Length: 279
Ligand SMILES: C[S@@+](CC[C@H](N)C(=O)[O-])C[C@H]1O[C@@H](n2cnc3c(N)ncnc32)[C@H](O)[C@@H]1O
Image (cartoon, rainbow, N blue to C red):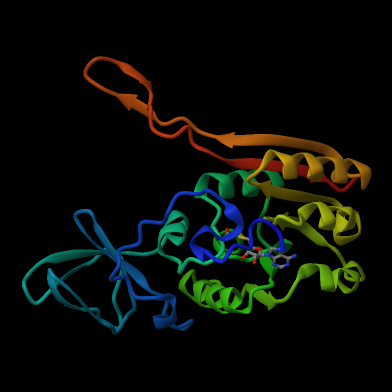
């Protein structure tokens, strides 16, 4: 067990990431089915995930969601409150997936996808699945994902999240510790990308050259600089090329009457991203 395995699953893995803002009355992932992907219904600053055919109730009235509901239309509750219908887009996964292991924020997912070139027909090995936001986002780029989650309950939730994200057929969520399957996976034809978001990444990185195709990429996300350093050392020792670690940080801008400057809100550090290549 590492420091990420505390009893408090809200802080799973010790990742200090923003809380998703899913409303309390949003249906759970268990309500979704793979064949009827949910949509968002939006009224002012309220946003709910609903399933076609579902009856959704709130203080704004009862909303009957038709089975053939179409994004771009407007529905009304029995009290006459309008809700616009939207399809889920990438950043919505972060806010509306049922949360287990701390999900990667959209900005960092964008960095992983851009730095490794995730694209259609790629084969990707991902660990750990956690909430599954990274795995689902990569699948929505057209890649096929094999992802490992050692917590069986988390793995079940992740499968339901994949259905919500419309990628249940593209993401194989395997229950178990990746380290137990490394020997078998090394025998395969190779992955285009290996993504690791676990405290034990330094133990897995030495296997990366054998897991990746020539020119394939490794991406490791670490919330702590100590793990980032250990991972970088392991990547260099394993013979990976172009090893680079960057802090992922963004400063929000504040545009006030008196002037403009970076916001005094939290600095926006989420972690360290290592990128390396099989050469
Ligand atoms: C921070 S979460 C991953 C979040 C995920 N990237 C996302 O965007 O939703 C890390 C997860 O990795 C799992 N985990 C840690 N080490 C693992 C291993 N060796 N094999 C499988 N799962 C592992 C933990 O149980 C935890 O759920």
